[in-house]
Image 1 (tube, rainbow, N blue to C red):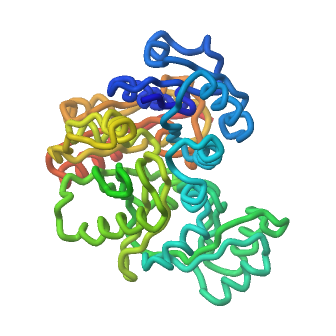
Image 2 (image 1 turned 30 degrees about the vertical axis):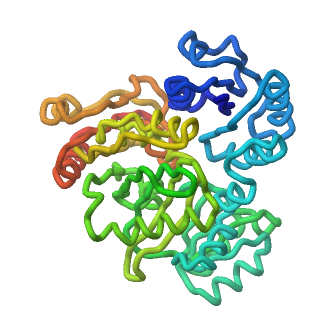
Length: 407
């Protein structure tokens, strides 16, 4: 099988996908923005060809590159795994008659209001929401639904560009900051109180083959706004717990309703006083290299499992569920430059055998803002057979390790 893979260079773990495709017997041609001379020897050993484009989200440029590759030989699949690349790749896929995620599915997995409308029709519980470019419609929705509300870009990922508003004054400020008063398209939705997590799958022809459930501590919006918090993402290994049955059923229902075939998915959810609520889905793997945690905790190379699904239409391995896994983000005490760390030696001594890996930017490194995400600054990833004990250890890390900085 000949697979075109879009953008093997960035972010860093993108290289794992061509590696895995090559490992399961595929011919791999990559399309990326870097020159071919920038590819290291290992990457070159996995690729049978490479095309440089100005931008992988420029549909015409991507189309021209794919047509050049097709002129040299048959292409079976065109794959991409980055949120921002999904729609351009789907459009080119259809224009070049290559199987895979459709433009309809790609659109529904990117446009939040359209996504929720399709899922409400399928009986999936979602927050009330609208998509609009009209500030008057935002105000009317607020009057109808009440506060709090969430305003976000229609195609935003996670908490990027998201505002929570609790009153009219905050609403007006958000209307200005999102530029909906200037005609910018946004999504507006009811704020759902409750605990937040995500459900990730690897699906083959629309059926879930591998699945993983993670929890956020605290919820993303709070984590991305509050410096003193060291937020955690924690993977459970208690997948058969009865409380997760409804979540798994909802996940399969979402995949079916949106027409997702053979693909990784990343689905956000809330559970609170109004029960289980769907939040949003991406037709791609999760960010911040969470697949690395899944693989380590489950004795599984999930990149290879993905490649088997793409190339062979099946997987044979099963997650061991032997360990829970997680990561904790460590924020600098202020913006500026990192000067050093306190408490890391103590953490290594106490929990060293449970640490998967870590990143401590060297002194002198400029800090990244709190909203930069879970891997923006320092972080530690860990695993343990017991979920509750892992939570305790991650919390102890957050209380012990201090990232010192000077503005």
